[in-house]
Image (cartoon, rainbow, N blue to C red; front, side):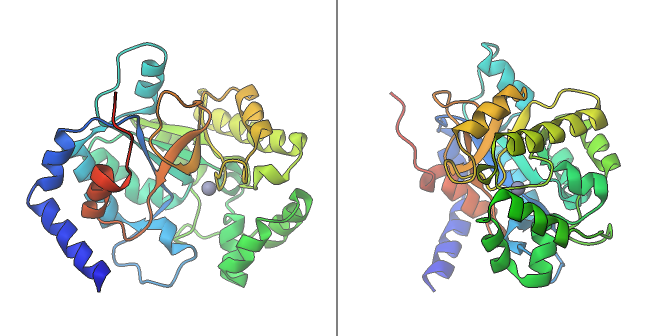
Length: 309
Ligand SMILES: [Zn+2]
């Protein structure tokens, strides 16, 4: 009841232009990096795919893009790199869209929406499922055993996880809503103006569970594979699961740096400010059900930030 009332109030504040006016007076303390995963068609029935909360509706994404285009400043990774290197300063409300994992729906549904609103983005792609046309291990396991089993598998030692990953690996149909991109999709995305391809490991392990060599192999194999496909350097990375100290460690960061990545994203919540290490950029997780009004409210109020001096 309270939630429904809050939704109505936020919708009214959006429609009245309140959030627009509020944002136009505002300056973010850093980059608002939005973290998406897959996209779901608006008419795709509820309860028929795994981890559906991570797959926002295409209509929701379009509404987010429209809001950000009208009230903030969508930036590209290249623009951010240039600003960090001492080039042109970023605009006052910079927003960077990122999409983790490499779901095919990002190619089929997100790409046209991003193009419609001229929004740059970074797609952080796991290469093994793309190269082998296999489901992501966690989707395959969740389809067979349920999502709880996946959470348990994430706590296993690396070797045990690797055995499970091989056990659950299975071929995928292009029409499966959980399907990964194809190599051709990755290439087309890389050739789309404003879109960059980043790394997300070869097979999406919890890196913190592996030794240095196991981690290095997952990070480097992914980078080499993506660079081979798209013919240019891959400079951004996202840690699978992404929680600092739990899913990746200081050793992981050093390995990511040694592999030649310049920017890496976590799932820690916050604006990415210039005070932080570029290899631990926090983000805001975007889940299904976040309306444009809710996103506007969070940008104005909930994602509280210290006042600028
Ligand atoms: Zn991921």
